[in-house]
Amino acid sequence: MSNRFNSKWQFLDYNQTQVVPYPPIFHLLSVILAFLAFAIIALWAAATVGYEPSTIFDTDINRTDDKHWFTTFIPRKIIESEKGKLCESAMFPTGSSLMTNAQFPSYTYTIIRYNRDPLYRLAVAEYRGSNLSVCAIDTLKITVKMVSGVVGIAAEVQCPEPWPAQLYTSINLDPGEIWAKTNLQDLALDLLSRLKVIFDSGQYTNNTTKGKWTMLNLILRDMTLNALEEDPNHRLQTVPPLTLNAMRLSNAEDSTWNGTSSASGAYYGRPPEIYNDFVIPLTNFIQVFISSIYSDLGIREGNIYANLTTLNQLINAKDNVANTSILGPKDLINTKELLSNIPINPYSSYSDLSIIRNNASVATAYLCHVTKLKSPADWIDSVAGLTLSIWGGLWTTYMLVVSYLSSRKAERMTDQTSISNDQGQMDKRTAFQSTSKSDTIDAVPLLLLRTEIPHPNSG
Image (cartoon, rainbow, N blue to C red; front, side):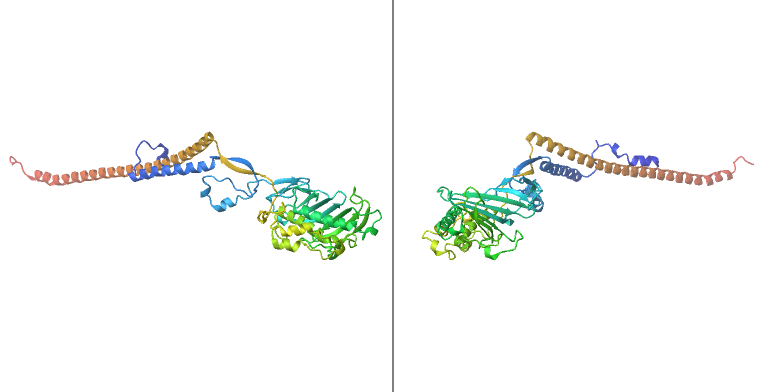
């Protein structure tokens, strides 16, 4: 029993120099299978160890790996699942300046805080390509200086989760500058011209104690975003609707608030003294500024540069609320020119509407992890080494199995031969014994016969 058990597991001792005792078709199929296995392993090795990790910077955080020769054979679902997983987030601390990926961005934006946190506790937040079209203009601040002829406007833009940033941008315009004029600069000149007429008229002189007004400061807010009570009496017909929160008129050119002669607006609970006389050029100017920001953010709704119908609805070339005594023949001349020269865009006076990008994002680059082809020497070393090692292991395993089966077959054939030989010997022995017994039986009567015949010489 012990010998039989030991011999059963001694398949590694099989003599592999012998021809495998199977039909020729088995040998042919084995060779074909070996070549197919080698080819498959080589292709798999080339698509895996033939490439190495690499890092690149890309503006698309949802990019997939570079297209390789084997990409065509990968299911589309697997490729799509890589989006957003290969690139690291961009980090923007408070105080960072950025631009959007609009084709021609108008402004630079500064991050003043995150999550509307007045204490600035959240100093940095990761950015993963969030859509800026969901952001909204929170606050506008306007300063008009009559002596220097400079119009300044600033905006705060609030973005929601997952990137809750508060952005700030501003621009100072010199309407007298004739180079690189834009729509915003043209409408700033209309506003400045209207205010000059108002401030030069004697209608409001009695309301000042230090002479003629020379400066206008405005704060406008989206009351819904600021959780404040809406005041329809001070709301401008802009998109989004902004409320005149505070307005101050002064004659101190060197300071924004010193020498204030009149403070009004929703914050003070007083209607602005000159509101009706300048609200139309003010609304036009603000709407152009809002639309230029919208173009940066990829917002088309309520954007005069994205829709000519919106342009004609939100920009007014006629003033039906101001005192007619202050309206001259050149009043709102740039606004009328704006409406007559269309199509337009926020970057110049005349151009194509189609340049506004949908769903803009921050213009930045992300660190992305991709794969690239190895150098020739490394490629050969990696691919050939892995292919031969795997193929060699599989082929050795296959031959061990074949050897074991062959040995078992040989053992069975040997056992059958032994049994046949033993049976033959037994048959011969039985035949011999049968022959010997027959001879003995036949000899007995002869012996008896011989004993009964008397001798001739006997008495």
